[in-house]
Image (cartoon, rainbow, N blue to C red; front, side, top):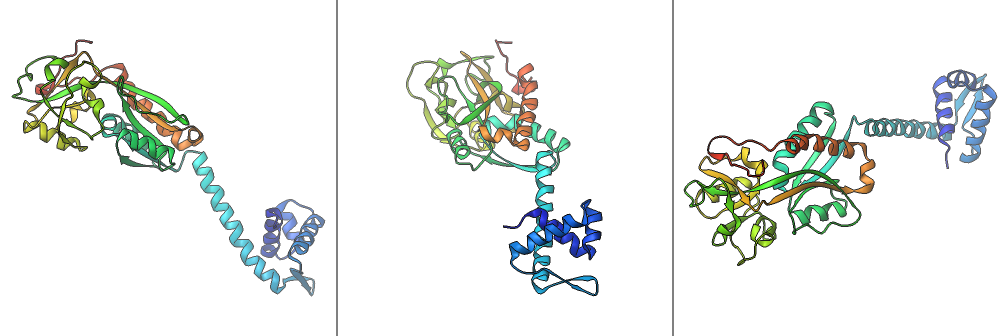
Length: 316
């Protein structure tokens, strides 16, 4: 096995042409350089240099090793530079799986802050359901999962994942402007028992307040759609109602839709999950810091919605 110190000394001898010159550049004594070259020749099993008229000349074996030594040392320098970039937070890639309902307000703000301060760190985003995001984390496919949880409907979180609570978000129900309850400042859960629901996925019972807040018949799901614009369009056409975090209301694309808070209050806790060992990765830790910073205004004050989208909040 080659000693990298011997390779560096050998490469310096090749480049300078003598033991004495290599010793001066490396800060060694000439005998120390000679000892390292003898040790390297013992490892190789043959002579690497021959003297011709007081000058060193590479043997055929020396020429082969010289070519490889240069490549090895160059690769090691590149590796060191890249590792220094990662540990110095000037480079890196973070893979993040997000549940759309949790990502709309937090992720863009966090990524904007990240791009301004650390443009060399790249974030790869994938949208999926809560259990799918957590599964991708445990399998090592992603570094961070951004998942909302609801009272009584918490996702089953593997024990090797670290949770970072980010923000609490109150739910609102999306209604068509002409809906019988659209004029109410607050909608009671019991008033929605006969409604047809539009949900994010077949397992998104957490979006249906009856499931955990009030007893009653199981709600009827008319459509499932992950895309928030599709959900809005279905609500706008009167095909059902939907429950979303209040933080997404500023992004409504349909003016005829209104958002109304629910009573009793329905709240999501938005958290980031990651494998505990990944918290030692500087780029991952930095993205978590930016997510916390982006969530801080939401914790301090709930968003105000203007025009037809404004909804009153009895908790405020």
